[in-house]
Length: 219
Length: 408
Ligand SMILES: Nc1ncnc2c1ncn2[C@@H]1O[C@H](COP(=O)(O)OP(=O)(O)OP(=O)(O)O)[C@@H](O)[C@H]1O
Ligand SMILES: [Mg+2]
Picture 1 (cartoon, chains in turn blue, red):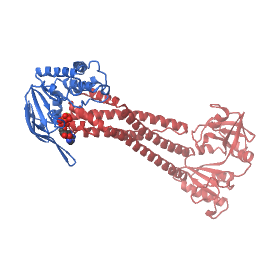
Picture 2: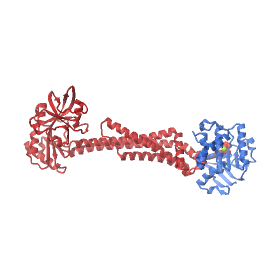
Picture 3: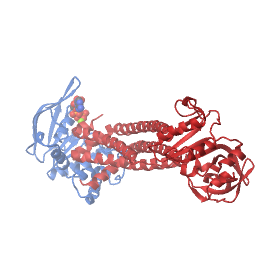
Picture 4: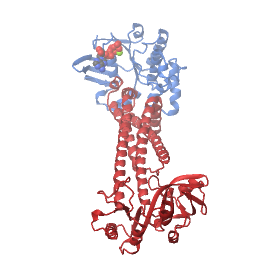
């Protein structure tokens, strides 16, 4: 259960103030599948980072499963990012010069998954996103779409209750995008909460609910 | 996350950044080996000078012909003077009644060509008496020394330094009983001195010793001597003996005014003092160079660590985003820095020791490695490496994951 109230994010650079999120409030129930849409620069990614515990809001309150995120320690937050939330970055953010399999294994290193299980698990998820033949390719040897799929596999490998995906199909051709959406649908059926940013109405349709943002506000 | 995992992650990161790892290691190797080598060279130079001075004998006064110069040390290029005689030396030993004189060694020295068989070598020919050997703590390795009878009878016998033996007869030869020629005069070899391992000036390994009288009459054709070495009974009475010898020789030479003296007396303290001053400057200089190379090496290590800070900050942001705890990230980066400086440090250590060994062997100096140079070099390089591996990691781990990922 995600709940934000009067949430704002203001960036201050030198003398310029940028209001990325402007006093928004909403809640998302456990097991919901929500799409966030809106023009470029409307604050979608910023909001997603805050929801993922990667960034801190300037104002307002964010409660995750009844816990005030602001009151969590750094380590508790790290634990939540590792176990409860799977994050697909808009810019993928793979570890440079590192193989696909190692990238997917990384959350398991920090999540205390026994060493022996990591490889098989990572392999399973890479196969699921259609990269079973690219395990040993390093980040720079992968196409944009392939990197995005590695990022998706990495987000799913810890079996998180909440999946936050920032344009997860932005670089993927429509047939493969459909496969990814099928995976998300499947997870949704199993009860995972999914929040997905997208520009495409076709993709947004998969969600039961669409939140539209503009200039840092929900409209 | 346990230690083995931490090390595995650190090792992975080091292998992934081959360029950075290589350059940082190189910086550490250069820093450490430069310091170790320079300090080693300085110390072996110092030790070499010390042994040479000690090989001249202990509690030694040296009487030289010629006027006393203000500093007490005559210029080496000064004209040969003829004021000292064998009789002066004998008188000092027998008649002077100066308490504190243990032994008197009159000496005459000149370089000359030496031949044996088909070989020849240019060596210092030393005309000496039996006293020379105890006074200069030089022992006979094989055969006999020069005896008083040899001097009285002006016998044509010789004692060779080991270097001379090697040069004329080959390594390890014992040419006792064989003949060597100085300016066509034949000398029978009666003994060989032990190796002292000196080099440079006054290298006793590369000398031939013959009876003083033989040297004066047959080889050089003179009646004076080059110097008188006096061994005193103890270090403490050297100044006293130096003064008494001075007055005794003045009266023997029928001189009343000490400023008119036709000889000068040098104590070993004078020599040691001068030498210590020189080696002191030398060592300070090398220590300075070592400090600079340590600084340069340190800045090199620091630069390489800092140049990659942007990429590494992003890496830390990502690791934190995926669930790494702050202290885990810092521990991993610390482990990385420790491995890096540890491996670089050990390589630098081995390289530095090897380099010092080779250089000292090449220029024939004793090989000295001191613990303090190792500790200092290792400590400073490793300290800088670990500090600049750890500090940026700590800074980055204090950022929120997004701030770190966006860092530039
Ligand atoms: N670190 C920052 N400093 C200053 N302004 C920022 C910073 N990060 C984001 N912004 C601004 O915040 C606003 C929202 O950015 P955000 O990335 O959330 O947009 P978005 O909706 O995800 O856009 P897109 O669809 O292009 O990904 C933008 O106007 C952006 O310029
Ligand atoms: Mg965005």
